[in-house]
Length: 407
Ligand SMILES: [Zn+2]
Figure (spheres, rainbow, N blue to C red):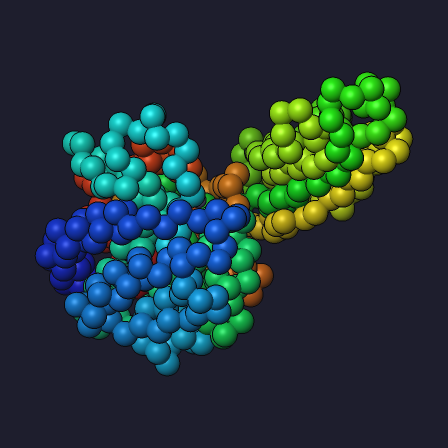
């Protein structure tokens, strides 16, 4: 447990670093790290990791780069020999962001951290660049206090399905271990995220046969097979599927859900389309069977294709990560709950999130992980994403208190 003198020292440290933390977050936001399914081979995070290294150098923090894919380095921060230790607290964040959803609806430049009152707006502030600052500065402050059982990891390519084999997965394969982990997403002050829904993302790839749309051979359906028409019929039947909508005690109102998120198709204005595809994003609770779901989708495809003998439609799985939830009554969940309670936080909620993240990798490795706890913030994956600045000092101190409870 932390004593009064250490708390006082921690508060002074936090105050002395506060301005540097803010300018660090601003710099991180100004570096575009948009990752998407079609820029896997770009050097998305190289520049931001350079900026994180500068901060580590200035703060005299040791670090190690772990790079499996060129230009996309993961960065471990902490004592190098602590990397495989099973006794430490691990703080986790990621350095990429989703694309800007709708420029017109942003009240400020998404790549410029903009302060309005207590709010700091910018793409990635909540998810998860504020978290990068937590990782770096909490490690520094704890080291300053003489507490060394802490380390941090900032991974890459989280936003493309949280399962890249060159991101956190790779670092865990390299031997990173910990007693507990906290993924430093921003959220509500009173919420402790103890798990997340699973995520299944798949493409339906359709092939038809091209023809000129003005020809009699098309009018009489003797030549040509419209891939968009096939895809359209498959999707509308998928939407009519009866879904199991049961809830789970740790997942509040969340249930199974699926949504079409991307659609491509066609070759030209007057061409019968020979290609079309769509991505379906599926969210699952523990116990929801993705095999059974995909089996039903396959049945739909088979039935639709009866009317299109020359058509082909195939399922291609892009992401498949499980739903997870840690024990909410002990371990790291209890530690957070106790610290929040002692800090006078009312209506504390321990719940799993609807959105998936890399928490499952750590949990499956045997590291009980809080899948979201950090600055107050919101509007992730939307316009006007923000973190709140007035509670920043209070929340950083909470991380210090949590660390001291782990030993
Ligand atoms: Zn995200």
